[in-house]
Length: 156
Image 1 (spheres, rainbow, N blue to C red):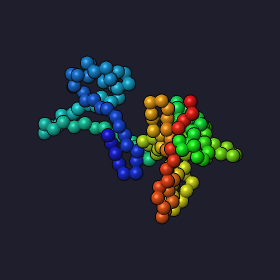
Image 2: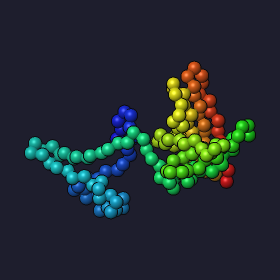
Image 3: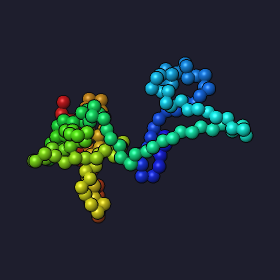
Image 4: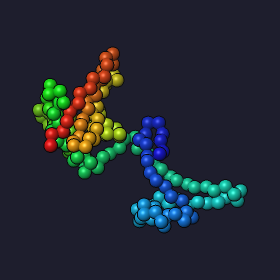
């Protein structure tokens, strides 16, 4: 895992030239892994050096196929309050409202956040995969108050 403050973490698997196990490993020997086999250079001082250039993003995007799995209608677990309908448009997750919808930005780790709030307030939704269906937890926070959470289950 590669991390830096203010950026999304990168999780990847790397391989090193000269490793005789690469040919026996289906993942390491696959065509898509060739860019992850790093050249090991032995220096004149006997120290091995590997260069791995990486770029990290401040925000992550999510594939449309993954967004599709999250879209649908969610009912509150406590049966109090309104149901929430999520859809995707333009590669982003939206929560339907009376006019069109409110867009949420992907934060990583199954969290999305509504970007329009100020002064430390936030409205986030978190997806928790379960065996039968997807649960969504809505987190609402305003400075000076406790975090309010509400759980929703996706309708089949």
